Image (cartoon, rainbow over all chains, first blue to last red; front, side):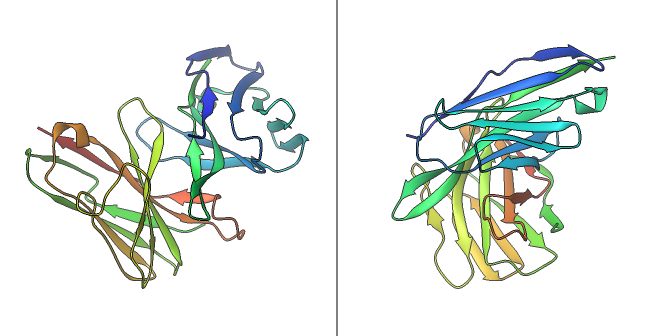
Length: 114
Length: 116
């Protein structure tokens, strides 16, 4: 069973600080990694993806990937109360018969305190 | 991004009954996915629905319990059969984005199901 592990939190940061969300995965062959944001009572929405080792920046969001350590993280700079949500890490995992499925971690709940 | 609607948005059902959830997309898509999100848990893929073929179910999910229809490229239904309280979950459909990766998915608003 392929696993994606996240600290469930809650992670509380003050407004304006950097929020750091972490994810580890068990399948060393994984090539792509996705971060979804889910507001309470809403459906998940894709905010970042990363395929290569290193950093990928998009506005206030930076995804960091270290395939050797099987570790992917999401940094949110200048955190805002509107960033308060659950952040889900997702990794494609082989599910048999030549197909892959998107395997989600349980998510980290982030609270940005004004 | 695709616009996805689901019906019903929520329902309360009795044990032993069945509920059919509809998913409508505003554009034609080859693949549609059905997920379950149990309280406090992450998303688990139930099945992949391709138009013109049988749905592909993930381990732990069977067609008799979760029959799926995919009559055209913009619509799918998921039925939750012979429900028990353990089926209380949010059920979401999703479709791939336009990037070409099936993993960049757009989700519908979800159907919140409570089974008494």
